[in-house]
Length: 542
Image (cartoon, rainbow, N blue to C red):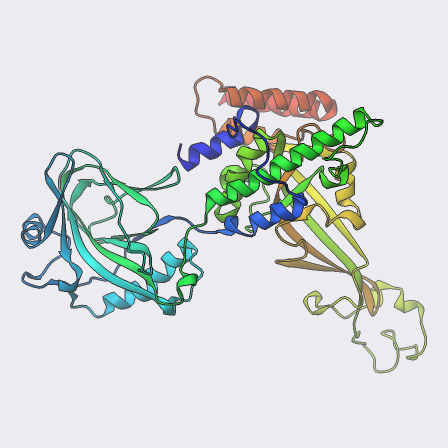
């Protein structure tokens, strides 16, 4: 299953199968669910990159390729020059025993254009290291040319895995696909069951394609039907301390830690339920599984920002570490009986702010008739406050006086939902707003200030922060309840973009949700029906 199919399956939460765990006993005990979950999210799952990435360059620098013994090689690569290179290269055979890959040694490749190596170092290298999330200084990264590789016509796929010496500090590979006329030759890069596919053709005869990947991946090369694929193969080498070499996260370790967290969370919820049913029973060795240790809701903040529009925010929109978080939490959440929802989170802080007011007249208040030590009626009248306030320069005089947390809940497929119950109200209360959120801080990131002027020299300053989060709750909860929200806009957008000849199961569920919402909101339903009738009539007349 590729990444897109995996996320599509997760979005269909009601039918999602989760992880097949034969023994649901947690691997160890989590004594603090929230802290242990946050520890995983801040560890292996903090990875914000990809195991492989591709960039197409339509304005690439011409390397002015020069091969020892062959001279200058023109681009796009011609059939004649390809055969000349093959004659001077070492070959690799496929499963049929045919020579299909040829490698010309990198130490015999020169670039007559001095701008080529600068382009690799200053343009391609930074972009690829950012995409791979290597988090290293580019001053300690070396781009070592290993070979000029040609791949000729072949009918079967080829599996490749590059062996890297243990003492090597190479952490990745960079392939520059040179311009050539060929058909086929897609590259599939695979890591832990996920495949990323890159096209090597159709990018223009003068453009180049760069593909970078970590060394821990494997590759599968599609058949080439005609022509040759030519690429410059570089090794990405780290020149710093060995313990700081970039690496892919240990996702197996992360899954083990998550299973311990979710398994312990489920055990404690079940223990709390059993205790409620039999309050007179004797305490056993698990009596420390009290209800306080089994949270009714945990909100994991995402690190990226997403569109506020309900039609655009869903699981498929997640990227980087946010997507990685969902892909690893979802199977265990489903297996251990938890629900997942998305949320737009609006957090507001309010406090007192004062400033020096600019007066229209030198003596006293803006009206010109009051002395400095008097409080006149014009201090109360906004009509007399002629000066403007630069809200970006204001600061709160003291500590935050009040906070407000507002949640806009969505299903994983983007369907608007309503969240209610005691836990929901507790999240919105000032004193409890923070205890449900992990993986970040609500008062971090871009903030939007606003100011409500109450007197000539002071008022209330509000800081507004917007975040997105993954909401985790037990399937059966006495304190949290979810119901379908106002799905009108979401349903219209989804159904309008449908291309199916007959309604799919997902579309049928969406229509049922829309009808159920309209039934509960009859006044709105009447208006909606009128609008629909007008639209249908207009469509028929058209």
